[in-house]
Image (cartoon, rainbow over all chains, first blue to last red; front, side):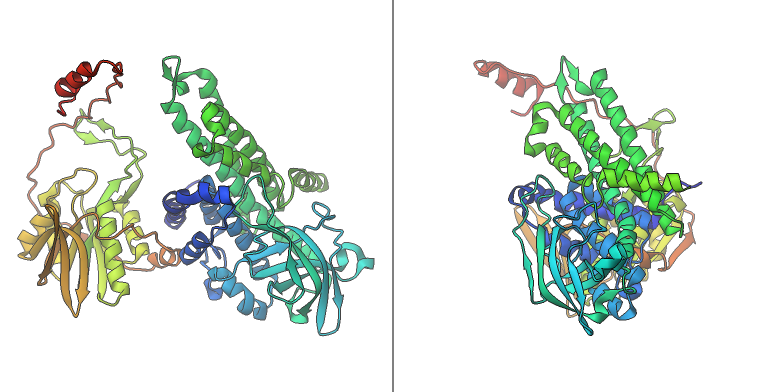
Length: 380
Length: 245
């Protein structure tokens, strides 16, 4: 067993940390207040290689492993999870899905610009009536011979406006149930696509979340991913990998809150001494540190299993479930340690708490992760 | 034009400093090592100039044991073409300059940070120029190459001085030489593994310094609050205790 990181992994972690502390931190509060998309940062992070981290250099990616990805996601999310979610969706849902299941032509045409970060990707699975219940897709994809015709509405789409490449799940054979679902690569500027208003969210405010409506949108046949009816399996496989990104994000949010709480507790004085010297605060910090470390280890184990070609669905679900739950607990305690200061925006921890909440909901709620874990347990 | 950027391997600037061995030795337990921030800025400027087409090759070099190779690999990831590690424990500025002189003689421009953030000696650059008989320019805050001519900006009292200098030269650079240190891109990080890192043995050199002991600065005194009506007392404290008036 080896807990050491390679020089490359450490350099990537440092690069992410440097960028987050030097650049993201400067305007994170302003972007959160204005719900402004981090366009400049995504461009810079793309140049550094963060948008296609695990894509083979043959397809213009950085060729890094998933462990490096976890380390990078942690550092970026400590400062700004609204930026890191754009990176997570692009890397572990969209690029991963195309790398694993895309045709050579699809990789050349769509994966390359996504891996370079010139295009941003979005993953369109949720619907007004199909969130956790992803088997029951109402969006239809009618087979018209040389193309499909898409109709329906998708909800809660991260980067809905900023993305130029959509991966859309839609039902082709309603009689076959989830086995009739297909996945398609759809260009956002296709005629018939309209966007709902920017969702005014509680947290992750500078990522742009929209609903997306499809009205007779033509999608060429060659843009279908995999065999006819592969869409549901495709979505589940992509989400297995996606969970590692969101788990690492949740862990990073918690780690960021812990760092801030620790620094504050060592400075703030009450009853004649730094509050860290009061056991009530010191024990809180200890509990928070144990949770963050557990979450980190779960994330890294899932990443390691993926990198080593082992099944990782169970590990990634455990990591996502645990990391997002403790992110909520740790950020809440960080606000508590800050007292009144924790409740104002300047100290960042209230924002981290708002961001943490979403990690329990998106890319599979905590309840869905429990379904994945329990089913795997009971099957074994 | 061939550039050599000297890289000092220093503790991260947030390191908690401790001494052992009767306060004669810096305790390196758990220390995270980084490129000396001034050297990192020097390297950033060299890489910018190379990208603009003015430099043929950038080599980075340090005097250090194998633990320092991670720092050199980072310099390669940032954009240096190759690296040289002189296999020795750096003892003092003269020792380091003597070792570096062996590898620096074939370069046109040597860049060195104005000081290293650990011992703040500010001596290696000047010594190296003297040993090699190179020109040397200190307090360099800007560097350009136009038509093969090196032009430098120096910080002087109340302004700046623009100079042109013949190579070979040792430039001792400070803040301003580059705006921010360059963050290595992942492509650079991957390429760093394949770039040559040569280890050369140290030459004999006299050790001219003996470290007697190190001492930590006294802890910060508690904040004194002066009653708002008592300006006299404030002035007295500023004069007698803080000694700023």
